[in-house]
Length: 180
Image (tube, rainbow, N blue to C red; front, side, top):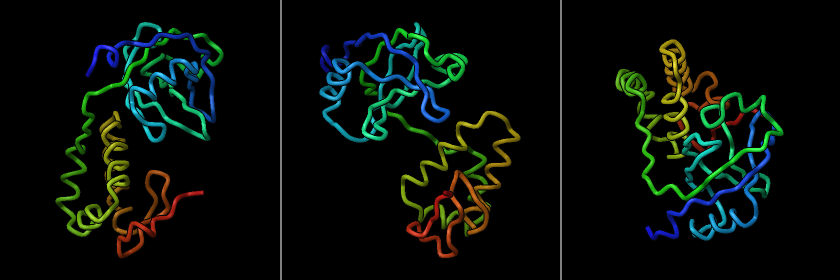
């Protein structure tokens, strides 16, 4: 990575909200530079930096044609209550490999249920990752247990999980229905 790519970009941005999600727009100059460094204009761009002097690791996302840096409560305490606040932000491309390992309880539950494990292995990589991420970022033992159980029920073709209705009985990922 060149020194130019490592250089932090700094800017001020007003905290806004879409739905329940606080975010900032990057100024055009900073956005153009990030897109140039990332060598892409679509998809997700891993970034890191600081919000009001607090380090963050995040993903720059394009939603409805606009690039947004979502500001969660780890990045800015009470961010949903701080809409309109002017934030001091630095940003750069994050070149670190991001690997999320499945929660041990999810792995154990899959090993204990060969049907659910088979269905899990047949899922698209993106849906597998969605399930892994969801469970891996839960905080309490109770919510982990509850959601691992829900994931297994979902994989068995019953119930809903992560905003999706159900997996058909054959496990065909093309027939997974999203909640409306």
